[in-house]
Image (cartoon, rainbow, N blue to C red):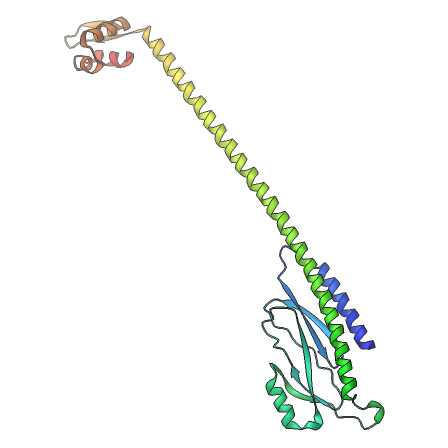
Length: 259
């Protein structure tokens, strides 16, 4: 019992350290494997889907260790693994049959001879069953505590993930708002630039309308073409297209200048 308490104490300390060292946002999902071997309880925490290495089996005088009753590869959930022993006196046939039936048989048969002194004889079957029952109950309590620690770690991870999602959403909304404001500012600047260009063009046209430009017709006669001349010709020809058909040389340039 002292060994069991010492082992469980180390196990619980390991669980507390493991729970404190969890990095909620990025840690792999973990599972807990409890080993019961000859009255000694140990535990290991491994990544889900990984394999677990069994500890060295506890030797029981008068019994042969045959293996474990659970597969130790691709561990998908918390589980309890029991070491399986057969009385050595049952013979090699019984030992081999037991090994063949186990999902994780022992690589070699580990046997400790039964002591001859009564004080260290192997426990009676009833006592051994009681001890195994006590060990299983202790292991179950350890497993429950490990599951509670894992649930607390998962809850912390979920909370952190939700906080990160909220922060990311806020960042995305801020970026979207900044982009919309930048687009609106650019559109306003483009509209202002367009308006300024239109106003400048209108001012230039108004300035041109009050001026004049010299031109020479096809016969070499020089004239000063004014806005009044343009308006008069427009009344004569009706449209700018017809008027342009009758204007040559500098007269065309003058028409384009005022048009």
